[in-house]
Length: 136
Length: 316
Image 1 (spheres, rainbow over the protein chains, first blue to last red):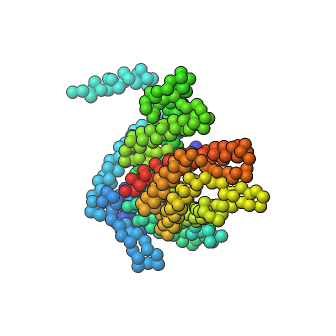
Image 2: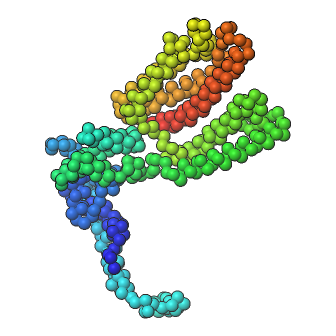
Image 3: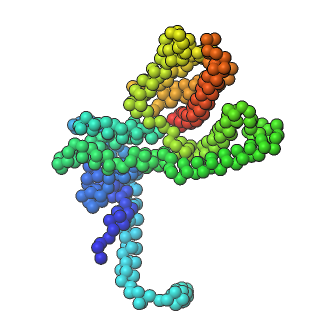
């Protein structure tokens, strides 16, 4: 086994990129700073992917932004709005539910051996019986 | 090498600006530029050369077309499938239309089935036949443009078979200005009297018909409009409504002048010193050549006009 295809892992991580971005923006940050932070946290992302997400979040009112011209170069800083905080918390709850459900499936079925699986017909019968058992 | 760095970044940002709706292009381009500079600085600190740093920064953004699509939320560039679909439809519609016209011509009918849209093609002279086929093609092209534009609704710009926005890089504008200057020189004295002239026995006689020469002042006005458009593009470095509007106006005027030129009875008038047989052959050749140039130019400019008008609506 050579390990997971990085593209597959990338897809998994992209699914939560919006949530992670919201989580990191409790402190105001500029675009490239965010790219670096995400990279350090294990979410390798490029500007071409992150920028449209920031724009979309801002248009939804979950982020606000402003130019900071006090440094050597002007930079646009993004920060969470109240709506963004609420969205982050809701998404975090949803993420926990998804993670628990995923863990449950993995714990109960990930180590099923092929020999233990029922043939197609038996499987259908098994599901039917199981459904009948569950009925009150 | 370092002199090419800003140009590469500028090219990327210009392209991105052209692809985005006017209301948000400025802000997005400024932000993307800031991101590029941050990435360049970071890469240089990590030991990358300026060239490599710039290249990495631009690569991290992906193609400007893809980035613009992501930012706008709908495709702002035309995907290959749409382009193929347009070409396929145009081929089928044109083939069917032409076949019907040929059948009607072979049947010897005189009346149009649908006035100005479907009917027998003229067979004599041959240039009239070519003009008829071209007219069939133009009708189909226009109809398909309309269908694609209507079908797309608000995403009109994305659904058309090519990107509506011209590149209009500064380099193109400078080149255009040079070409316009050359054209102006060729169509006006004294160069005109040298280029369009027959030399015989040490004397040079202009050969352009007075009817055609009478159009030259209009040509000069149109060249001036085109020059102003290029200067605006050079100064503002973006595709804005004023430049596009001027371009549309100039294109419309050029099509009108070309149509007027096609309708002139004579294009050349050879001096009496040329014997009548040779004069007839030369005049015929010149007329056919110029007619072909006028018709083809009118054809391509008509397409350009449609694109500019649609872009103007999109910008508005």
